[in-house]
Length: 67
Image (cartoon, rainbow, N blue to C red; front, side, top):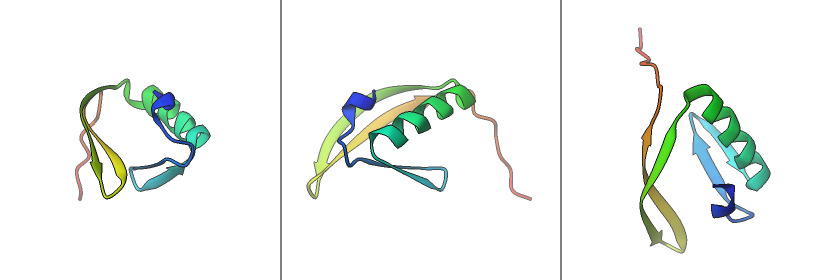
């Protein structure tokens, strides 16, 4: 899936920002190992000159409760 990202792509996840394909590939590998997830693309749209992907995310996510 890294081939879907532009060279200057940015991903924001869990309070972190990953910029560029190499950083995104590393993030993807670490996230896959942590959650064993799958991503199903649902829609790709253009908004203000940006491509935005809407996707279904499933995996082994543990519930986090605040105290």
